[in-house]
Image (cartoon, rainbow, N blue to C red; front, top):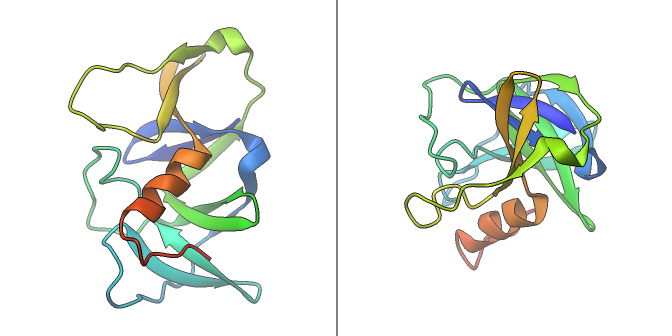
Length: 145
């Protein structure tokens, strides 16, 4: 699992979906895009769409830009998730994955499929296909590069 922090909370992504982690140097805004699509950046000649999931995850959107991006892929598609920090990579036994809570407002955290117990910490496991479905569901015209 690729462990990361977003809005001060711990999250994880299955490492099989992670292409790379990089420091975001510049972001080009794209007019008319939903607020969670922050813009695009150039990563060694490839245009990467940058997504800020803080609002979707019920986290406060800070005033500062997020300094890192985790490039996730689903099939031939890829997107950069903006994050605070990527501190660790862990091998996680199945018994450390707990079912995600279903209580709360409908769709409160639609991308979180499980809860990860890592030492004395708990965090949400982001389900990559659900992240892409949420990005696509923002508007029928949205296309992730």
